[in-house]
Amino acid sequence: MGYKTEKKIPSIILSVFIVLLILVGTIVPAYAAPTQDMMVTDSGEMLSDREEQEVSEMLYSINRQTGIEYLVYTIKSLNGEDIETCANRLFRTAGLGDKEKDNGLLLLISYDDRKFRLEVGYGLERTIPDTKAAEIINTMTPYFKESNYADGIKAAVSKTENVLNGEADTTTEKSSPTRGDVFSLIFAIFTES
Image 1 (cartoon, rainbow, N blue to C red):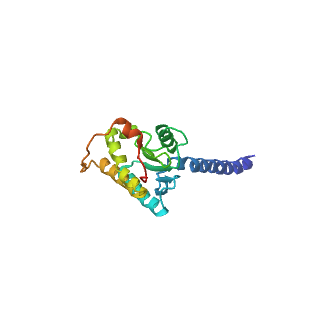
Image 2 (cartoon, rainbow, N blue to C red):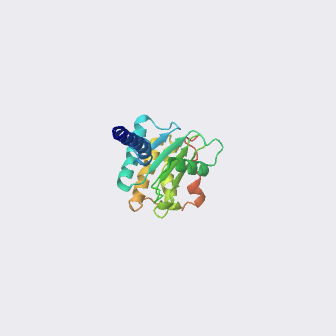
Image 3 (cartoon, rainbow, N blue to C red):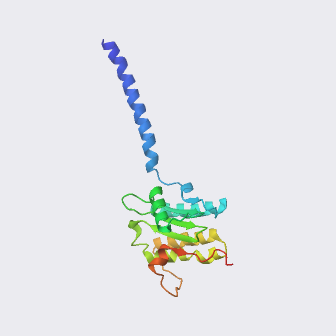
């Protein structure tokens, strides 16, 4: 009888070990650090592969320096959805930012609707208040008017990095943007007719 029990112990231990490996394999990816290929989702087809790679490198650099998860997400159309609601949904779905710090950023651009929004996690609202968010997304407008989407997005990402680093603003604004400008900026026309 002792011989059968001794045979069962190794197989029980092996079974438990296999179950633990499976559990760890399914849990760890949910908490894995973001990779560079997760930083840009170009569903709006506004960027070439090379441009997407360049923007990804900029966003990944911000993540490595600050721990902030910053996603650029382009879409073709909002399909009647409010940009604020869409940005909020995408922000939550992507799980941006550290759960404790709530320090994620999402730059959403809707090509057909000609709207964009910077969604800021609560943990970053002191660093990027509404006025700073408006400054960041306003940097895209002149580029977008010339259909130069990649440089516009890169300018916004670069401006974000400057704000996060606390660098002084060297631009001169003629008027302060309103809260509504921050959340629903309509970039007049990508290409002026």
